[in-house]
Amino acid sequence: MSGTAIRLAVFGVVAAAAMAATGTASAQSLQKLGKAEGEVAIVAWPGYIERGETDKAYDWVTQFEKDSGCKVTVKTANTSDEMVALMNEGGFDLVTASGDASLRLIAGKRVQEVNTALIPSWKTVDSRLQGAAWHTVGGKHYGVPYQWGANVLAYNTNAFKKAPDSWKVVFEEMTLDDGKSNKGRVQAFDGPIYIADAALYLMATKPELGIKDPYELNEDQYKASLDLLRQQRGIVNRYWHDAFVQIDDFTNEGVVASSSWPFQVNLLQAEKKPIASVIPKEGATGWADTTMMHSEAPHPTCAYKWMEWSLNPKLQGDLAAWFGSVPSVPAACKGNELLGDEGCKTNGMGDFDKIHFWRTPQSKCESQGTCVPYYRWVSDYIAVLGGR
Image 1 (tube, rainbow, N blue to C red):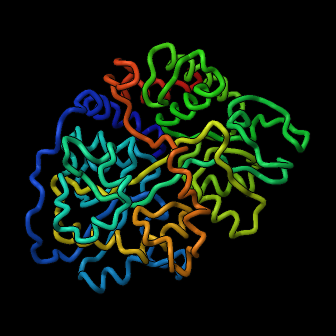
Image 2: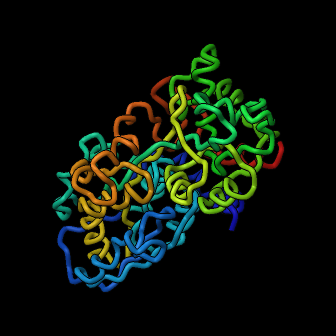
Image 3: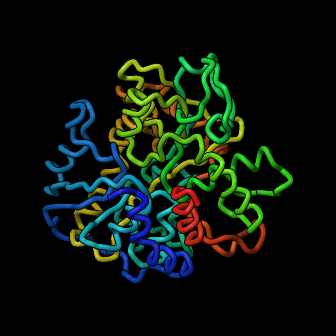
Protein backbone atom coordinates (compact mmCIF):
# COMPACT_ATOMS: atom_id res chain seq x y z
CA MET A 1 0.00 0.00 0.00
CA SER A 2 1.36 3.46 -0.82
CA GLY A 3 2.03 6.07 1.87
CA THR A 4 -0.85 8.18 0.54
CA ALA A 5 -3.29 5.27 0.62
CA ILE A 6 -2.29 4.44 4.17
CA ARG A 7 -2.84 8.02 5.27
CA LEU A 8 -6.30 8.01 3.73
CA ALA A 9 -7.11 4.74 5.48
CA VAL A 10 -6.06 5.96 8.90
CA PHE A 11 -7.27 9.54 8.57
CA GLY A 12 -10.24 9.09 10.88
CA VAL A 13 -8.15 7.35 13.52
CA VAL A 14 -5.41 9.95 13.28
CA ALA A 15 -7.88 12.80 13.69
CA ALA A 16 -9.48 11.23 16.74
CA ALA A 17 -6.12 10.49 18.33
CA ALA A 18 -4.79 13.97 17.67
CA MET A 19 -7.80 15.54 19.31
CA ALA A 20 -7.57 13.16 22.28
CA ALA A 21 -3.95 13.87 23.04
CA THR A 22 -4.54 14.24 26.75
CA GLY A 23 -5.55 10.58 27.03
CA THR A 24 -3.39 7.83 28.46
CA ALA A 25 -2.99 4.18 27.63
CA SER A 26 -5.49 1.99 29.44
CA ALA A 27 -3.42 -1.12 30.09
CA GLN A 28 -1.48 -1.45 33.35
CA SER A 29 2.25 -1.94 32.97
CA LEU A 30 3.61 -5.42 33.54
CA GLN A 31 4.75 -5.95 37.15
CA LYS A 32 6.63 -9.24 36.80
CA LEU A 33 8.10 -11.18 33.91
CA GLY A 34 6.56 -14.56 33.27
CA LYS A 35 7.67 -17.46 31.12
CA ALA A 36 8.86 -16.47 27.68
CA GLU A 37 6.05 -16.98 25.17
CA GLY A 38 8.36 -18.09 22.37
CA GLU A 39 7.99 -15.13 20.02
CA VAL A 40 7.84 -11.37 19.71
CA ALA A 41 6.31 -9.41 16.81
CA ILE A 42 7.81 -6.01 16.02
CA VAL A 43 6.80 -3.19 13.67
CA ALA A 44 10.01 -1.43 12.68
CA TRP A 45 11.62 1.06 10.35
CA PRO A 46 13.71 -0.44 7.51
CA GLY A 47 17.15 -1.48 8.75
CA TYR A 48 16.23 -1.39 12.43
CA ILE A 49 15.95 -5.12 13.14
CA GLU A 50 18.71 -7.01 11.31
CA ARG A 51 19.52 -10.73 11.45
CA GLY A 52 22.42 -10.79 9.00
CA GLU A 53 20.37 -11.40 5.86
CA THR A 54 21.49 -8.19 4.15
CA ASP A 55 25.03 -8.23 5.57
CA LYS A 56 26.09 -11.03 7.89
CA ALA A 57 28.17 -8.60 9.97
CA TYR A 58 24.96 -6.92 11.11
CA ASP A 59 22.93 -9.34 13.17
CA TRP A 60 21.41 -8.51 16.53
CA VAL A 61 18.51 -10.94 16.30
CA THR A 62 20.09 -14.40 16.20
CA GLN A 63 21.80 -14.18 19.58
CA PHE A 64 18.67 -12.73 21.19
CA GLU A 65 16.62 -15.65 19.92
CA LYS A 66 19.14 -18.13 21.30
CA ASP A 67 19.37 -16.43 24.70
CA SER A 68 15.68 -15.64 25.21
CA GLY A 69 13.83 -18.40 23.40
CA CYS A 70 11.76 -15.69 21.69
CA LYS A 71 11.62 -15.85 17.88
CA VAL A 72 11.56 -12.38 16.33
CA THR A 73 9.19 -11.52 13.49
CA VAL A 74 9.36 -8.09 11.87
CA LYS A 75 6.85 -6.08 9.86
CA THR A 76 8.64 -3.22 8.10
CA ALA A 77 6.84 0.13 7.95
CA ASN A 78 7.99 3.01 5.76
CA THR A 79 6.06 5.86 7.42
CA SER A 80 4.84 6.77 10.87
CA ASP A 81 1.25 6.70 9.62
CA GLU A 82 1.75 3.11 8.50
CA MET A 83 3.04 2.25 11.97
CA VAL A 84 -0.04 3.79 13.59
CA ALA A 85 -2.30 1.87 11.20
CA LEU A 86 -0.56 -1.44 11.97
CA MET A 87 -0.72 -0.87 15.71
CA ASN A 88 -4.41 -0.05 15.40
CA GLU A 89 -4.91 -3.39 13.64
CA GLY A 90 -3.23 -5.17 16.56
CA GLY A 91 -1.41 -8.47 16.77
CA PHE A 92 1.99 -6.84 17.34
CA ASP A 93 4.00 -6.56 20.54
CA LEU A 94 6.33 -3.66 19.83
CA VAL A 95 6.86 -0.74 17.46
CA THR A 96 9.92 1.47 16.89
CA ALA A 97 7.89 4.68 16.83
CA SER A 98 9.14 8.13 15.91
CA GLY A 99 7.89 11.20 17.73
CA ASP A 100 5.19 11.96 15.17
CA ALA A 101 3.59 8.58 15.96
CA SER A 102 4.35 8.00 19.63
CA LEU A 103 2.00 10.57 21.13
CA ARG A 104 -0.78 9.43 18.80
CA LEU A 105 -0.27 5.86 20.00
CA ILE A 106 -0.39 6.98 23.62
CA ALA A 107 -3.49 9.13 23.07
CA GLY A 108 -5.19 6.36 21.12
CA LYS A 109 -4.50 3.90 23.97
CA ARG A 110 -2.59 1.60 21.63
CA VAL A 111 0.50 1.37 23.84
CA GLN A 112 1.03 0.75 27.52
CA GLU A 113 3.18 2.28 30.21
CA VAL A 114 6.57 0.61 30.43
CA ASN A 115 7.78 -0.59 33.83
CA THR A 116 11.40 0.54 33.76
CA ALA A 117 12.12 -1.58 36.85
CA LEU A 118 11.89 -4.61 34.54
CA ILE A 119 14.49 -3.09 32.20
CA PRO A 120 17.81 -3.14 34.08
CA SER A 121 19.66 -1.23 31.35
CA TRP A 122 17.26 1.73 31.54
CA LYS A 123 19.81 3.57 33.67
CA THR A 124 22.30 3.50 30.77
CA VAL A 125 20.03 5.52 28.43
CA ASP A 126 21.13 9.04 27.48
CA SER A 127 19.65 11.34 30.13
CA ARG A 128 18.40 13.68 27.37
CA LEU A 129 16.12 10.90 26.14
CA GLN A 130 14.92 9.22 29.34
CA GLY A 131 12.11 11.68 29.98
CA ALA A 132 11.64 12.97 26.43
CA ALA A 133 8.25 14.51 25.71
CA TRP A 134 7.49 12.19 22.79
CA HIS A 135 7.24 9.09 25.01
CA THR A 136 6.71 10.49 28.52
CA VAL A 137 3.23 11.68 29.53
CA GLY A 138 2.20 12.59 33.05
CA GLY A 139 5.53 11.34 34.36
CA LYS A 140 4.92 7.89 32.88
CA HIS A 141 7.21 6.30 30.30
CA TYR A 142 5.53 4.66 27.32
CA GLY A 143 8.63 3.29 25.67
CA VAL A 144 12.37 2.68 25.61
CA PRO A 145 14.58 5.03 23.55
CA TYR A 146 16.19 3.19 20.62
CA GLN A 147 18.13 5.45 18.23
CA TRP A 148 18.07 9.06 17.04
CA GLY A 149 19.33 11.20 14.20
CA ALA A 150 18.67 13.98 11.72
CA ASN A 151 16.83 14.07 8.42
CA VAL A 152 19.88 15.02 6.39
CA LEU A 153 20.21 16.74 3.02
CA ALA A 154 21.66 14.04 0.76
CA TYR A 155 23.28 15.28 -2.44
CA ASN A 156 25.21 14.07 -5.47
CA THR A 157 28.78 15.38 -5.35
CA ASN A 158 28.92 15.49 -9.16
CA ALA A 159 26.07 18.01 -9.22
CA PHE A 160 27.49 20.17 -6.42
CA LYS A 161 31.07 21.48 -6.45
CA LYS A 162 30.77 22.09 -2.73
CA ALA A 163 28.26 20.90 -0.19
CA PRO A 164 24.95 22.78 -0.36
CA ASP A 165 24.45 24.84 2.79
CA SER A 166 20.68 25.36 2.58
CA TRP A 167 17.46 23.43 2.09
CA LYS A 168 16.78 25.94 -0.67
CA VAL A 169 18.10 23.43 -3.21
CA VAL A 170 15.05 21.19 -2.68
CA PHE A 171 12.43 23.92 -2.18
CA GLU A 172 13.16 26.43 -4.95
CA GLU A 173 13.95 25.97 -8.63
CA MET A 174 17.55 26.89 -9.47
CA THR A 175 20.51 26.01 -11.66
CA LEU A 176 22.99 23.73 -9.91
CA ASP A 177 26.77 23.64 -10.20
CA ASP A 178 26.57 21.13 -13.06
CA GLY A 179 24.75 23.74 -15.15
CA LYS A 180 21.40 21.95 -15.03
CA SER A 181 18.16 22.87 -13.29
CA ASN A 182 17.19 21.05 -10.13
CA LYS A 183 13.67 20.59 -11.56
CA GLY A 184 12.78 16.92 -11.65
CA ARG A 185 15.99 16.02 -9.81
CA VAL A 186 14.99 16.54 -6.17
CA GLN A 187 12.74 14.65 -3.80
CA ALA A 188 10.61 15.32 -0.71
CA PHE A 189 9.39 13.01 2.05
CA ASP A 190 6.03 11.33 1.57
CA GLY A 191 4.55 12.10 4.99
CA PRO A 192 2.52 14.93 6.54
CA ILE A 193 5.27 15.59 9.08
CA TYR A 194 7.29 16.98 6.15
CA ILE A 195 5.25 20.17 6.54
CA ALA A 196 7.60 20.84 9.46
CA ASP A 197 10.58 20.80 7.05
CA ALA A 198 8.95 23.58 5.06
CA ALA A 199 8.21 25.47 8.28
CA LEU A 200 11.80 25.06 9.43
CA TYR A 201 13.07 26.54 6.16
CA LEU A 202 10.63 29.46 6.47
CA MET A 203 11.62 29.98 10.11
CA ALA A 204 15.08 30.95 8.85
CA THR A 205 14.24 32.60 5.52
CA LYS A 206 11.04 34.48 6.46
CA PRO A 207 11.47 35.54 10.08
CA GLU A 208 8.55 37.95 9.70
CA LEU A 209 6.26 34.90 9.95
CA GLY A 210 7.30 34.52 13.56
CA ILE A 211 7.69 30.72 13.50
CA LYS A 212 9.31 29.60 16.74
CA ASP A 213 8.69 25.86 16.44
CA PRO A 214 8.13 24.01 13.15
CA TYR A 215 5.53 21.76 14.83
CA GLU A 216 3.57 24.69 16.27
CA LEU A 217 2.06 26.74 13.45
CA ASN A 218 -0.75 29.25 13.50
CA GLU A 219 -3.00 29.61 10.47
CA ASP A 220 -0.80 32.15 8.66
CA GLN A 221 2.40 30.19 9.29
CA TYR A 222 0.70 26.97 8.25
CA LYS A 223 -0.60 28.53 5.03
CA ALA A 224 2.87 29.83 4.17
CA SER A 225 4.31 26.34 4.70
CA LEU A 226 1.68 24.77 2.45
CA ASP A 227 2.28 27.43 -0.21
CA LEU A 228 5.99 26.58 -0.19
CA LEU A 229 5.20 22.88 -0.54
CA ARG A 230 2.85 23.57 -3.47
CA GLN A 231 5.66 25.52 -5.11
CA GLN A 232 8.08 22.69 -4.41
CA ARG A 233 5.76 20.17 -6.04
CA GLY A 234 6.69 21.63 -9.44
CA ILE A 235 10.30 20.48 -9.10
CA VAL A 236 9.90 17.21 -7.18
CA ASN A 237 10.83 13.98 -8.96
CA ARG A 238 9.20 11.72 -6.35
CA TYR A 239 7.80 11.88 -2.84
CA TRP A 240 9.80 9.13 -1.20
CA HIS A 241 8.86 6.86 1.67
CA ASP A 242 10.73 3.69 0.74
CA ALA A 243 14.42 3.98 1.59
CA PHE A 244 15.46 1.41 -0.99
CA VAL A 245 13.49 3.09 -3.77
CA GLN A 246 15.25 6.34 -2.94
CA ILE A 247 18.61 4.58 -3.13
CA ASP A 248 17.69 3.40 -6.62
CA ASP A 249 16.53 6.90 -7.58
CA PHE A 250 19.88 8.41 -6.57
CA THR A 251 21.65 5.62 -8.47
CA ASN A 252 19.58 5.30 -11.64
CA GLU A 253 16.95 8.06 -11.91
CA GLY A 254 19.03 11.21 -11.82
CA VAL A 255 18.05 12.43 -8.35
CA VAL A 256 20.72 14.78 -7.01
CA ALA A 257 19.29 16.20 -3.76
CA SER A 258 16.70 15.22 -1.18
CA SER A 259 15.85 15.00 2.46
CA SER A 260 17.02 11.55 3.48
CA TRP A 261 18.15 9.35 6.33
CA PRO A 262 21.78 8.52 7.03
CA PHE A 263 20.78 4.90 6.27
CA GLN A 264 20.44 5.60 2.54
CA VAL A 265 23.59 7.71 2.49
CA ASN A 266 25.59 4.93 4.18
CA LEU A 267 24.43 2.28 1.72
CA LEU A 268 25.05 4.52 -1.31
CA GLN A 269 28.54 5.36 -0.09
CA ALA A 270 29.21 1.67 0.54
CA GLU A 271 28.41 1.13 -3.15
CA LYS A 272 30.93 3.87 -4.04
CA LYS A 273 28.24 6.22 -5.33
CA PRO A 274 29.02 9.98 -5.39
CA ILE A 275 26.69 10.79 -2.50
CA ALA A 276 27.30 12.84 0.64
CA SER A 277 25.09 14.54 3.22
CA VAL A 278 24.95 17.64 5.35
CA ILE A 279 22.80 19.38 7.94
CA PRO A 280 22.12 22.78 6.34
CA LYS A 281 22.39 26.14 8.09
CA GLU A 282 18.66 26.17 8.84
CA GLY A 283 19.06 23.04 10.97
CA ALA A 284 17.05 19.88 10.40
CA THR A 285 14.08 17.91 11.53
CA GLY A 286 14.89 14.53 12.96
CA TRP A 287 13.71 11.46 14.77
CA ALA A 288 14.25 10.02 18.21
CA ASP A 289 12.70 6.59 17.99
CA THR A 290 11.18 4.72 20.89
CA THR A 291 10.40 1.03 21.27
CA MET A 292 6.79 1.02 22.50
CA MET A 293 4.68 -1.90 23.69
CA HIS A 294 1.16 -2.55 22.42
CA SER A 295 -1.54 -2.21 25.09
CA GLU A 296 -2.65 -5.75 24.21
CA ALA A 297 0.73 -7.25 23.40
CA PRO A 298 0.27 -11.01 22.91
CA HIS A 299 3.82 -11.80 24.10
CA PRO A 300 4.59 -9.37 26.94
CA THR A 301 7.49 -11.22 28.53
CA CYS A 302 9.30 -11.61 25.22
CA ALA A 303 8.54 -7.95 24.52
CA TYR A 304 10.26 -6.90 27.74
CA LYS A 305 13.17 -9.19 26.99
CA TRP A 306 13.58 -7.46 23.61
CA MET A 307 13.35 -3.97 25.13
CA GLU A 308 16.14 -4.86 27.55
CA TRP A 309 18.17 -6.47 24.75
CA SER A 310 17.69 -3.38 22.57
CA LEU A 311 19.77 -1.34 25.01
CA ASN A 312 22.88 -3.51 25.04
CA PRO A 313 25.89 -1.51 23.82
CA LYS A 314 26.85 -4.01 21.10
CA LEU A 315 23.40 -3.83 19.45
CA GLN A 316 23.25 -0.06 19.89
CA GLY A 317 26.65 0.42 18.27
CA ASP A 318 26.08 -2.05 15.45
CA LEU A 319 22.73 -0.46 14.60
CA ALA A 320 24.25 3.02 14.65
CA ALA A 321 26.95 1.84 12.23
CA TRP A 322 24.35 0.23 9.96
CA PHE A 323 21.74 2.98 9.95
CA GLY A 324 23.95 6.03 10.41
CA SER A 325 22.07 6.91 13.59
CA VAL A 326 23.15 7.83 17.10
CA PRO A 327 22.77 5.30 19.96
CA SER A 328 20.42 6.04 22.84
CA VAL A 329 23.06 4.43 25.06
CA PRO A 330 26.22 6.62 25.05
CA ALA A 331 28.42 3.71 26.16
CA ALA A 332 27.87 2.19 22.70
CA CYS A 333 30.02 4.92 21.18
CA LYS A 334 33.27 3.35 22.35
CA GLY A 335 34.78 -0.01 21.56
CA ASN A 336 32.42 -1.06 18.77
CA GLU A 337 34.31 -2.56 15.84
CA LEU A 338 31.68 -1.70 13.24
CA LEU A 339 30.98 1.83 14.48
CA GLY A 340 34.53 2.82 15.36
CA ASP A 341 35.45 5.31 18.06
CA GLU A 342 34.57 8.28 15.82
CA GLY A 343 31.29 6.80 14.57
CA CYS A 344 29.00 8.61 16.99
CA LYS A 345 30.66 11.92 16.18
CA THR A 346 30.34 11.20 12.46
CA ASN A 347 26.67 10.27 12.86
CA GLY A 348 25.85 13.53 14.63
CA MET A 349 26.15 12.99 18.38
CA GLY A 350 27.05 16.68 18.66
CA ASP A 351 24.06 17.82 16.58
CA PHE A 352 21.37 17.13 19.18
CA ASP A 353 20.58 20.81 19.72
CA LYS A 354 20.36 21.48 15.95
CA ILE A 355 17.60 18.95 15.47
CA HIS A 356 13.87 19.63 15.76
CA PHE A 357 12.71 16.14 16.63
CA TRP A 358 9.49 14.84 15.07
CA ARG A 359 6.44 15.10 17.29
CA THR A 360 2.69 15.14 16.72
CA PRO A 361 1.39 18.72 16.28
CA GLN A 362 -1.37 19.61 18.75
CA SER A 363 -4.08 22.28 18.71
CA LYS A 364 -2.82 23.55 22.08
CA CYS A 365 0.81 24.59 21.84
CA GLU A 366 3.35 26.30 24.05
CA SER A 367 4.72 28.90 21.62
CA GLN A 368 1.47 30.62 20.75
CA GLY A 369 -1.49 29.03 22.47
CA THR A 370 -3.43 27.68 19.50
CA CYS A 371 -1.96 25.84 16.53
CA VAL A 372 -3.08 23.79 13.55
CA PRO A 373 -3.55 20.16 14.74
CA TYR A 374 -2.13 17.09 13.07
CA TYR A 375 -5.31 15.84 11.44
CA ARG A 376 -5.24 19.00 9.30
CA TRP A 377 -1.61 18.27 8.37
CA VAL A 378 -2.69 14.84 7.13
CA SER A 379 -5.55 15.99 4.92
CA ASP A 380 -3.74 19.06 3.58
CA TYR A 381 -0.55 17.20 2.70
CA ILE A 382 -2.57 14.65 0.77
CA ALA A 383 -4.04 17.61 -1.12
CA VAL A 384 -0.55 18.99 -1.85
CA LEU A 385 0.53 15.63 -3.26
CA GLY A 386 -2.60 15.63 -5.39
CA GLY A 387 -1.82 19.07 -6.79
CA ARG A 388 -4.42 20.96 -4.77
